Length: 449
Image (cartoon, rainbow, N blue to C red; front, top):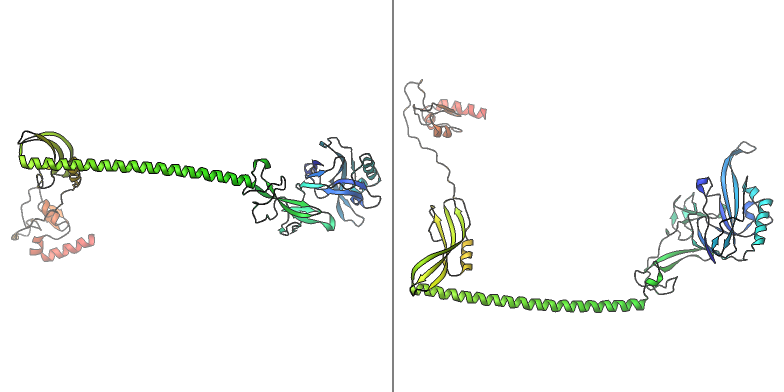
């Protein structure tokens, strides 16, 4: 068997894909209309098929030549027909055709001249009685002009979405390659149709096989080269090796974690022992200071310093104390200083470990002093001037304004304090001595606001 690719219909040359055809021809009948005289297997254009070497491929291409009129005046499209004979050799299709000719019509192409040339070349290249042509890939085929059920899977195929198969009243519709519904089951456990080895999970796909004699079937086929996929036994062995490798990695990881945890516990125990020793030494230093007393102290270093409020600061300093027996010890003082009321208070203290002193230092943070709103000045009752033309303050009644009287929202003001007091409220003097005028001014002020 030789695998060949059937020549496609040259649509760019004007050939009609629906009226053109290809056959693996085996004989020519003496009677019949046009293409009915051809004996053989029709194959699709562009299809990949297997056929015996020595087979003859007949190619029919029809092209429109214009409109013609019947006797009653009806118009129809006329077509010419080109017949080409190609020989299938062991290496594939021969490049040079056995014979080709262009006829004015299909009827003329399958008339005495065309049929005689086909029979002549069949006699020279005697075909096999049953060629057993097998379609490997169907090719693009003829687009379907009408919708219908797929002849393979039965699902509806919309117009133009599939291919038309057959001629005349026997025409059927089918999906394009790989468009039919795939089986829902997995290919794992199925035998590969190419190599016969059982497929493992994820190694194969379902392939659709369309056979004119046996119908449609689905075959499991390995993806790509079958040799690169393992058998189920090899896959099981590989999985077992992977499992053992994972177990070894987990065991090694557990050992590393156990070793790291033991090292962490050892370091923690060492830190606790050092802390206990440091605490014991600090208690011993404190007992000696309290028992022997301090003869002198020397500033060593200031470690931290920060503000607590705008007038008070806190610092952590290290000092060296000389005790009553002339021995020296290190202590850490947390103390406040500055001009604030809390400077030198009970915040802070003396510590015998740096960590304790730092903890006490960190307990205090900066905070602003609480703000107190200024109190409005109190005014004493003052007599109202007898002369109404004399200017006086509507808040305190004063007739003396060193910088000149100011106009507040509720009357005249003699200084800034009175101006502030009368910005939104009537002054005390006006309320006491001029109630009618105050009511009028207040009403007008509300209207303004």
